[in-house]
Amino acid sequence: DTAVSQTPKYLVTQMGNDKSIKCEQNLGHDTMYWYKQDSKKFLKIMFSYNNKELIINETVPNRFSPKSPDKAHLNLHINSLELGDSAVYFCASSQELGDQPQHFGDGTRLSIL
Amino acid sequence: GDSVTQMEGPVTLSEEAFLTINCTYTATGYPSLFWYVQYPGEGLQLLLKATKADDKGSNKGFEATYRKETTSFHLEKGSVQVSDSAVYFCGLDTGRRALTFGSGTRLQVQP
Image (cartoon, rainbow over the protein chains, first blue to last red):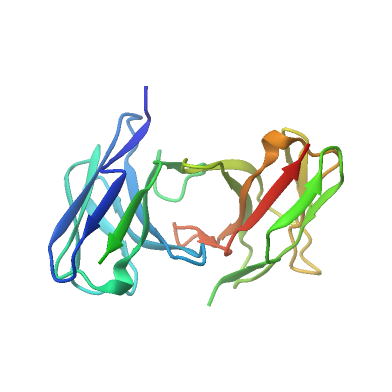
């Protein structure tokens, strides 16, 4: 049973397109996160949601819009994709806000042509 | 702001060698410190943690001690195995409710 699952695993698309990445956790956790890992392996928090409420919104372009239909899902929609958006995006969850460990998905590798 | 600095990799060792991966941090307050490991094609997994000064976290033969005086949390293992090959991330949590990670250090262990 996969605890935190992301789809798709790979996403190759052209500049200017709009795409979504989905994330689901079956751990019953209240909090979910999106992280971005760039080509140099730096891993940075983008968003966190607690019980469907946005808690953390780092300095991320407003082309990125997270959506949490329920506390088991946190999807990431990206408008007007740019070359600099190429990265691996990780979803994670934790029991409550600030709890450790965070459980990570396997990542979605986004490549912009 | 909060930041974590890790030694650059890759670190290449022979099996049974001693491992040290350096990690230093800058943070306000008293953060909790973590090491996460990322095996190829997988997400990050918590390896060990320490929540206050002088605490030692340990797991799977890995250890790290929270050193407030040197703001460090170096990862060590006495005898590495090929299966330890992965990317290791040092991280901290100052209570902002999200982790700040270092850039990761790739470890390659050769048989």
